Length: 160
Image 1 (tube, rainbow, N blue to C red):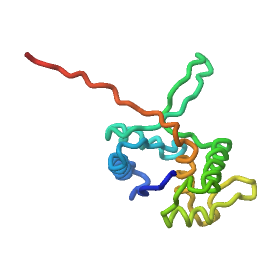
Image 2: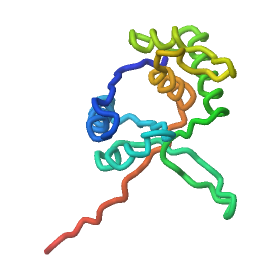
Image 3: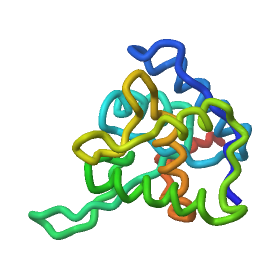
Image 4: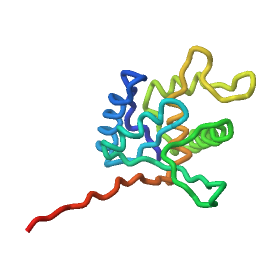
């Protein structure tokens, strides 16, 4: 079953460095697990620090309208359609017995205040947060779809 093994919030939302260091340490602790960035807001600022820390980053596949080629882009782009998909995946995991374990009081609290607003958008109730809900929803949707960022191989120079 899926299991939340760690939760870390950056101490400074404006500077991704502290959060990136925490994420890199957690990824390494968890056996080099893949990190999925939600890139809509400040997520793009996390790309370089995480790449420099050799964290494996999930990449989405998108079709280039001009060339027709499939491109690989780091991060998950959340829009109205993709938000519905990931929330549905989370709901499925919660309904399916033994599919997900929620040992985190913050996530449990956020799940209890996650609602549909007047326009039908799934989000945190006024005054609440949904960061952990979205992160868990991404994990449920992308389980088994890990696509790794691999740093270019460095040339090893040898001298004789």
